Image (tube, rainbow, N blue to C red; front, side):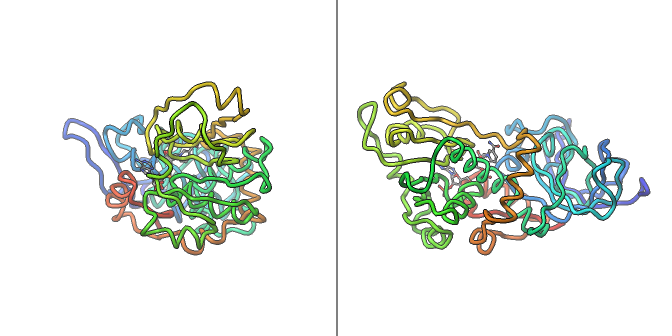
Length: 333
Ligand SMILES: NC(=O)c1ccc[n+]([C@@H]2O[C@H](COP(=O)([O-])OP(=O)(O)OC[C@H]3O[C@@H](n4cnc5c(N)ncnc54)[C@H](OP(=O)(O)O)[C@@H]3O)[C@@H](O)[C@H]2O)c1
């Protein structure tokens, strides 16, 4: 493609004129090196993208920069052996939107080793509707299942349930037959929606945060999908059933928590770390195959996806950083 072709991108800058962001016209030659060039159709709005839009977020490693940690689109040029012009592809994680230009751009150029072919059973819009958040929800569920959790074990709690990871976790778990309890800070506004995604019970964040005396308490949860972290996790650990497991993926509630050894040594509780960014490619392909097939999160895809334009990004970042977003927002390029 001609290096002079112009296109729109959302760019963050941090220089002697200060930190700022907005839509700019860029040209192909300004894109980073890579063996596949893609016409981006959709890019997701994730909590990490919100952090990338602020100078204190410590996500972006160099400026000027195009954020957007995930995207789906069509290959326009490729020297990578696995991809050719016209292929539909998706990308989440690796260096995308962190140290390599991301998805908030009509064109992007990337490392073909970070791309997947769009699995049969998903459209580009559905793939980005699921995006990093839905993929992380599925990765969390895979980890719970690998650690012996099954629907017969009892209630599974999803924290931050109206968020991207949370809403897709509720949708997939209920499809797989788990008894899902959803905890949220928006129980009155979004409780009905969470039930429509498949939650059997909706619990307020305050209820989950109630102080419990002692090192252990009533056994409530067979498993927890936790994209919230923070001090709330200290209380959740006390309420795990024998041999229960927590899949921990996020920190919207904070980066620190206190605990004792007792849930681990007296109840065999497992705390499972979830990382979607460097998830090995074989597992990625397997999980996207599930998301396109038996695990397809139909309820979340039908009612949890909001399509926006590049111009709306600053308002969307404000909402997601303040815990006001519900479901997944995607940008149509
Ligand atoms: N490990 C990984 O690979 C990976 C991948 C994706 C995301 N993440 C992380 O997972 C987290 C969620 O990401 P997301 O894209 O789903 O974000 P999101 O859409 O903003 O969802 C986060 C949810 O957390 C809840 N929340 C917000 N502030 C809170 C607070 N102060 N205390 C308690 N709950 C709060 C809110 O849900 P309610 O109002 O319903 O409570 C909010 O909707 C982020 O920390 C993100 O960085 C990690």
